[in-house]
Image (tube, rainbow, N blue to C red; front, side):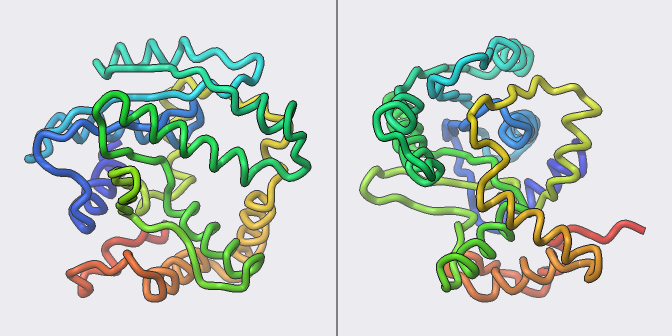
Length: 250
């Protein structure tokens, strides 16, 4: 946790993600990344100079067999306000629209529902669980499938909704998240979506992992290329860029 919170604090300060007195909504899907974000952001709130409050929001998309009561218990232990909002996303995507490639529509509906859930509670800042590997994967998805240099930013302001999105885990590697979640038995809620793990994103993850076997540090190089190419990624103190990237383990 110390390592992860340290990397998170660097990202928060590099991109000025948190302001004094804010309530920040964490979108908690029940997956490892959102649970890690919830725990790490709650820990950061205990000592960060700018005081802020964490509020957890889960969207119940209508998939059967997903029990969020362990997440509710975790929030009680963390003393974090928790809300579960029921939606018709599964019904719209699979039952009404019968989408053959449902991920894009599902993501759009989830975003809209999460934004609405936050605004209904007077919250204008949302923390998302995207990490270092997600940033690289998204960059490669845009390059390979769209023929452009694109991806998300560490901090994004949506003027039409008056909402700011932050991604405090962008310097944290997925393997460190997996290690922490497994060692501390965080209550991961397995998605029962029928296409979970079979998306283009999973293909890109597998491709990058394959390349990494022959070319170690490829993720770090892709991350550097992405940050040098995309708007919203400039760090004021560029001399410390290397300190912001995950270190190679000896």
